[in-house]
Figure 1 (cartoon, rainbow, N blue to C red):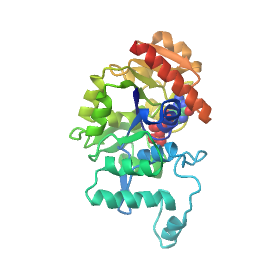
Figure 2: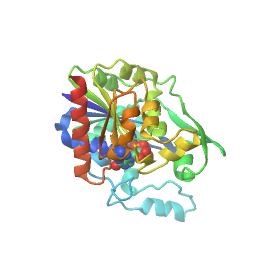
Figure 3: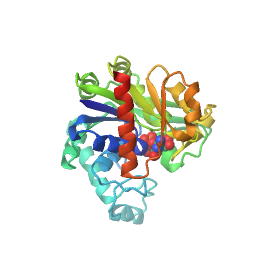
Length: 311
Ligand code: GDP
């Protein structure tokens, strides 16, 4: 039996790690957002894919929430000393991955293959699949004009007020044979939509037409985990963006956002009062993932509910 997880960065990687530990090692395939990908110093950077690689490969910096642990910063320090403003932090080992990826992409190797090779080098038995090998770029329309995703997220620290979000290139992009095969596999048991930012991390996946179509014609339950706990985000701008877009941040709004796509929503026990008002089944449990045990326990809960739905 296999499971496909749909993931953005940190929130998605936390549950992906729980699923990876809860399932047989080769039973998980994680489809990851690439809308955040961008070029810096001519290097191709894929933040969400790298977060998945570092987290499942046990190399992530847990407290910081991004990048690798045991990282050194010589390259960035040298670039700064030469006058290059470094608003996006580039650790040495992290940059080695960006150099390797850029080199291989330029040699004509697909992003899917580049990532697959790195995950093997990291000893990860789950598959980590980019949502597409095409270029899709998240653009954020704000009160300060339209910003490229990393301009908004890192350089401007999500401060500008969001008016709309679009995914440049998504309408003409297509997903990969690997993603379609994962979603169509006879042994597929469930699809788990991780507690990632719906607007910035999951919507880009859903904007790729053949990926959305494959999700819609699935034969297995699609169960989502809400990224909100007590109507607020654990980290990042999810609730802020919802407020700016005129949406009340609540489990009800998350269910409405994914209406027509998900079969059930896992919410935090704090939000259990929303369950009765949702048009789909909602299952309440503790969803804050502080420790590895929290991640595995939530993953087991999600898998058990998915199995019940699939009966
Ligand atoms: P990013 O691309 O690195 O911002 O990461 P994601 O989009 O994957 O995750 C951001 C979302 O994860 C935020 O909305 C958080 O509320 C959510 N999140 C982070 N940690 C947890 C957690 O422990 N439990 C739940 N339920 N959500 C979480």
